[in-house]
Amino acid sequence: MDPRTNPYTPNAGAPPPALVGRDAELEGFEILLERLRRGYAEQSMLITGLRGVGKTVLLGAFESRARASGWITVPAEITKNEAFGPRMGSMVRRALFQVAPKSSWTDKLRRAAGALKSFSITVAPDGSITAGVDIEPLEGTADSGNLSDDLTDLLVALGDAAQERETGIAFLVDEVQFLRVNEFEALIAGLHRTVQRQLPITLVGAGLPQLPRLAGEAKSYAERLFKFPRIGQLSPPQAEAALAEPAAQLGVSYTPGAIDVIVDYTEGYPYFIQEYGKIVWDLAPEDEPISQRVAQEAQRTVEAKLDESFFRVRAERTTELELHYLRAMAELGPGEQTAGDVAAVMGRRTEQLGPTRARLIDKGLIYTTGHGRGDFTVPQFDRYLRRNHDLAPPTPRR
Ligand SMILES: Nc1ncnc2c1ncn2[C@@H]1O[C@H](COP(=O)(O)OP(=O)(O)OP(=O)(O)O)[C@@H](O)[C@H]1O
Ligand SMILES: [Mg+2]
Image (cartoon, rainbow, N blue to C red; front, side, top):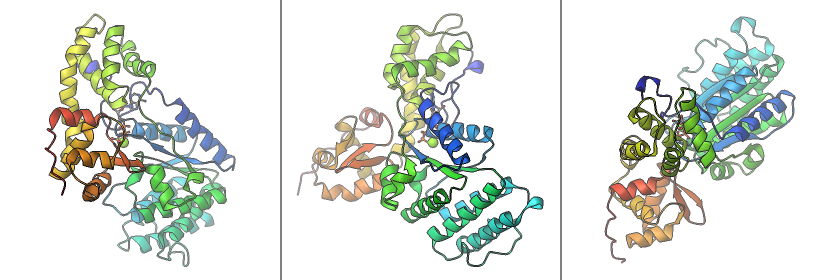
């Protein structure tokens, strides 16, 4: 088939041609906005899921819907190496200038700008955040040096300004698991206050499956502030729709056998579906349905592509011992494994491997599911590791 018309989107965050299986989350988001608009409290959402299941895409879809309902949106991605305070400062700055152009700032807006100035001087003394906000800092507001208190002041001032202008602000934050505990705590505390004050501000986030645990550890009341919808594999009919609908729009169909081959291999993981669809499309002959044979023939290419573009970059971020650990975990198969079982495969004691496991969690390659159990954050990582790495011989226990 002509690669120029290939509809599939195997790219991080790329909106798929058919966004299937996310109706519940989209509806939840619309309910959240509408309730906030009416001044009712509502739990916000932190979307969780493994790598490549469509969290970023879903945040993007939330953003378009928020904008279409007249909300101000500020998207952001947390990174490991950037402090959150200054980041939040620039997000608030972006929000503020969308609430109203500076020429029409009222007292409330000037107050919010003054709070932003105080906040910025406190978290980023180089003045990098407040370029263009030539307003005096608001003394005694957002300048205590305690991130929780200061962020609370800042969000409340911003919320007051938005409320006065009869608008709302939605922050859409990706990779939330990279927040440090004190940063997460500050964010939760700030949002808690805006909920109590019934201000039209919300923060919807996305991240790896450990988010509920991290949020709970940061603030015990986090679970009352957020829902944690988990997204993941598409069901077989949804996976079929994700494959077949974009092709059908271009007059191309799949045979049922071809669909089965692809759905089986991908297990309904969205990124794998896009990658498979993209490759099979290019291989398939024109003017006939995409057949089971072509789908099967494509599999080796798909696997090589996934190894190279999705799995290897993650495996390469490990030390030798960490890789041994991952490979031993893969030996036990898919799903969660206990630290004790992994240690047994390696012929070591659990405590000896504690630091290795902790580093793998820190690197975002595995996450804990409770009671000493852990799982890969990358779907089908066990398969990848088994087909590309040998199991190191166990070291005798000492
Ligand atoms: N509902 C869906 N239906 C079909 N394809 C989807 C769906 N959601 C996402 N995709 C596709 O899946 C891929 C991964 O999406 P996305 O980058 O949003 O995942 P992610 O969960 O943010 O991954 P990561 O954790 O690595 O950032 C993209 O190629 C996207 O086009
Ligand atoms: Mg993402």
